[in-house]
Length: 72
Image: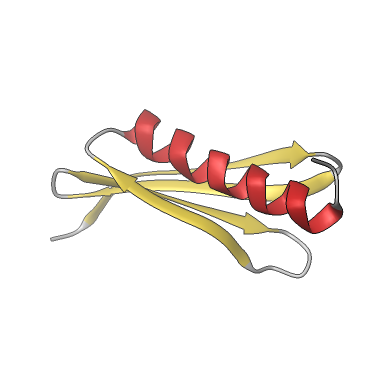
């Protein structure tokens, strides 16, 4: 199987720059959220739809970033 529907976006969460990558393999959609500095994966999620995979990964990333910075 090959990767399809690849997208890459830049976002800002509480002043922290992140990269959001989504792609599809077969019928499954995946989303990875990266911290731009130092370049680490913050969260990953998969789902049957792109929007749900992205929503889940962003929710995890926001929770992790906010708890790491102490901004609950």
